[in-house]
Every structure is written in structure tokens, then in C-alpha cells.
Image 1 (spheres, rainbow, N blue to C red):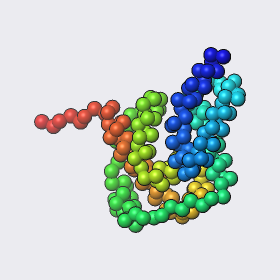
Image 2: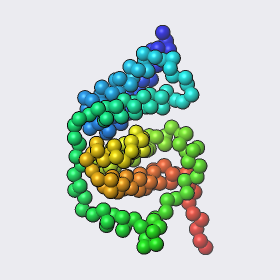
Image 3: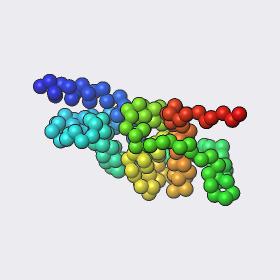
Length: 196
């Protein structure tokens, strides 16, 4: 009985983060509440299915991910993204690359990414960085990188062109890289030695 209460308590503590993620993807508070509830019930109904090979949060998030994908695929609603940006796609791409095709700013060396990802605080910082992105940019990034939807599914769901999707994904990655460089990886990189 105590373990069931403990599990229920842990799941309730996860609910706000799971709900934020579901709302970001589904853009519908009621539907997001439903998929989060379904994911939590799935865990509570079959607690023995959790083998402990990953953290409980990872396990629950995996279930939620599939519930969100099912909701997106079965949804008949249309969600349009307006392109109200001042820059054209060509301007954005020109600003990001040199004439020789290399990026203007190379990312810093992040050390051992696998070790960094294991740190709990990293995900908190990543969540903050995602929240700083424009809602549509964060949504398309999470659809691609977290839900692992292919470009065709994303374009259909958001009613955008493949080119627009790739530009938005690139912008999301650049902004996330900058935010993580500043708020996470920057803390772990020693300052460059001063020249005499």
C-alpha cells in the first residue's frame, strides 16, 4: 500500500511538467489534461510494467509521448502558423552561413554530452530554454526532436511547407544552443587563459 501511495505522490509531482509539455504540443488545455491523465492512469493501472531500467519520469514521459502522437494523428483540427517574421527565409539562411557554406558561429565544445545529459538540472535548464522560444518554434522543435514525427507529419499538422519547417527547426536549434551555452554549458567551461 505504501509503494502505491509513493508512486501516486511521485506521479502527482510530475503532473505540472507533463501538462506543460502536452499543452505545448496539443495547443488545447482540455486535450492536454486528458492525455496526461491517460498516461498517469496507465502507470497506476499497471505499476509492474515499470521495470526500473530508466527513471520513473522517463518512463511516464515515454507513455505521454505516445498518447500525444495518437492525439495529434487522430485530431481533425487545423492549426495554422502565421509567418509574421520580419526576415525572409533567405535572409535568415544568409545570416547563419558564410559564403563557403560553413556556419558563422561554431558551437562551443560541450565536453561529454552523455555525462551532461545525465544530470537532472540539465533538463530543468532545457525546459526554461524551451519556454523562452516562441511558442510555434518550441512546438515544431518538440514535434521533431521529442515526438520524433517526420517532416511530412509536422507539415500536415501545422499546415506549413517543408522549407518553412526546416527553417523553423534551424532557428529553434540555434536559439536553444545559445541559451544552453549561456545557462548550462557556460558554467562548466573554464575561461580562456588571458594573453600576456
